[in-house]
Image 1 (cartoon, rainbow, N blue to C red):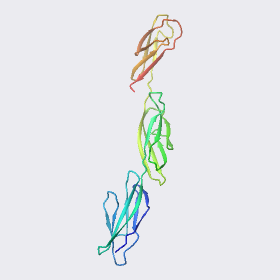
Image 2: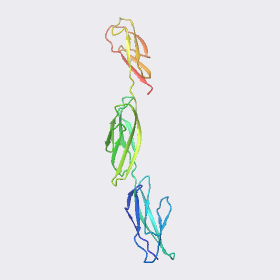
Image 3: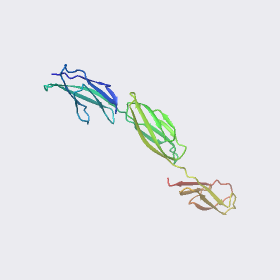
Length: 239
């Protein structure tokens, strides 16, 4: 009976790369063997009279495959041998959250790597023509918008993966106010304050600097004591 013995080159490869398998024993002169390759994945068996075969494994995460070779001669006598190969596939993943928590429209984001443990190199694309390297990073967006963030990872054997996510940087609303009469008024005189904005402001609030407040875009206020007052307007849009 024939003796089955095989090897693989390389014995470890990235997902999607070809691996060459070869039977280390050839049939005697004038004889022909049938070689049946069982790849231990979802693909069909390969049956050939060639002493070598090529196969590509595709995986979502690093996986070992035990490939089985059955060698059979013309008399139906057979032998089987196995060889284990490692198919590497790092998995890219990250989490993003804003750092400037004291504002309702944050633009500083921290991105933390959550990739598989075999990753050794990280490259970031923040979607605004800027990049960074390193496992974790912080990035500031200077213009409002939706940005596509990409993380590219690589392991020691140059196997790669990419993950994509998006962040939304909101536009701060802009508003100002007018008052009538302007700057100076008489005691107990009603002063009108009018909030002005081209943005869709939903909430308006006022602090008149004399321990009194009001809500609304257009309000009137009477100051009961003489003095200088700092009037503040607070506003909020639909975001």
